[in-house]
Image (cartoon, rainbow, N blue to C red; front, side, top):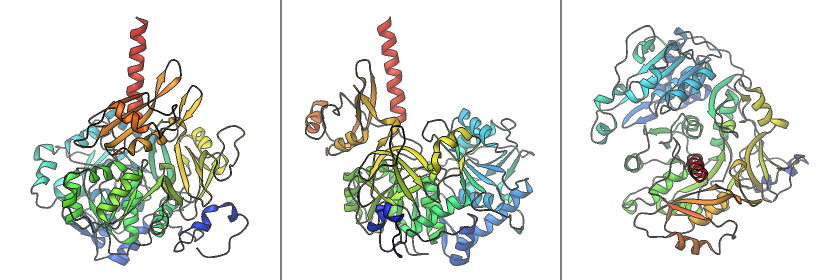
Length: 573
């Protein structure tokens, strides 16, 4: 870190512990987001940019495809500020259209391609997207096709899966069977990818104000659970990609291979895999979905060097029965996000691969990364790390009046920084609440230690209150993970007529392990207070997961609420 600390910076305890290779105060570029790709094409034209199941594309080829797709979109009527949906799994089409929409001046709207029809319709209605780009896989295309002519959707761009696949062999046949391909009408409401890019790609540049113009609507439950479109500007997203590049300073431009198994429609993969790879000129090794054996084969065969994942993926790798027979030594840097990373998972993965696995923290409203553990400094157990360059973390009291708290005290984690959204789309009330006081209120409880490392205790809404006593599920989960037989666990608050809530744990054991509820309770006896001890332990073969593979506490809470409601109804009868 360069420069001399000011009085204001004395309130930023992380500056004294900051990695010496990184300048927290260094300015960030103010450019349109697609400038990242233009720079990569200029610097790494002949380097491979994408590897999709063995089919490789250079940066120069990607740049040409983006230019032609952008001109094609303009021919469909895309103008500055127009919303265009991406309804795509991980394929080369995603980066092509992501940057093409931006180059045309449009706003990308991310859709999960596995959304139910009701969810697709709601996001179409809210975003106002009139064009959607999708792929000709039945399961995906049909969800969009049923929306055509309603919710404002007037045009579907259809991309052919066969055109981005190499000569299929082995497990490729199992991934995409001929019967999975959808037939789509050749009418005025549809246009194929080949027809869209049938042009010279020459267009006048659209004038973009990076700080004001929106690049992406990223829908999120935020801190209330109701989906809202986080408005991320060109500057927000470019800043987070450059912040990541500075943070992971050990990467070698033009020499890395980044694993893309997390879906690009999720902001974590979009920034930390796709955009960060473009900054560094890395080759993005894509898989269309998570399959453990396919992932392991790809990591080995492609000699992947950078790997972003969620804790459940690293756990699955750790417990794979033949993991010791695989050479994963090419992996040098991994980042985990989306959910708490158990310390034992981190240690085991680093031992197996020889890589560095760091945990970060972020949220859709912040593009998403706000803090991360350093790759060449201290990783404190239980901490999600230090603030990204230019990012300030503040801890606000949970009780009124809301006041800034000193280091070591627990409160709501709040964020200021260049990556923080401009607000929620068409939702001024939630915008005012979430950005009150000029800071992003995360809804998470945590504290900063004396060196500025952030520790997350739990989400405000997940805190269990039993007989007036606050119990933090994350603390209970960390204790359960210490048992060598546990592969996965989730702790929730179960409705309790006497205590208000009581602690319930859902656990999945490692293959071949034997454990009882009493055995786990005995193990936890000296690790948790009596109030924190799970009053109910449910063993399962698997636990529900979100589209990016993190454990879904929300689904388990809803299950338990239904059970409790049914039990209460039975009692009343």
